[in-house]
Image (cartoon, rainbow, N blue to C red):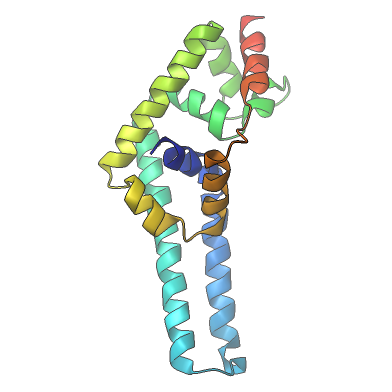
Length: 177
């Protein structure tokens, strides 16, 4: 289940864009339906399936937004650093990315406590995502139909792991400087 949740967290920042892309795709299919040479019922079924997929993405984003609202600012910052790609923006002196720089300076984590907190917040997210009904079976059945999630999930399950340690160490050094 851990890799399922990680895949969801890594793709979270792109969910809104993907939902908009699905909307545009559905609209284009409907507008250009007069060019479709096959059975019109098949096209209608395809468009209906795409609408359901879009709604599933929108529902996932809403659920995650609600979960993130319940997190403390420290927990959200930990997720942002590891999964949302806000490390480089947080390190930049001129850019104040969602107040991340101030929050990083506010918490004086040692490297050891940082990684422990990361593990705890991941366990919390696994429990919360299970609580809203996304189990490993549900994830594999309903969410792996999205190619972007499938690619991230496959990568996480492969032997090639993302090495976040250098990036995270850079953040830790910045916080302790």
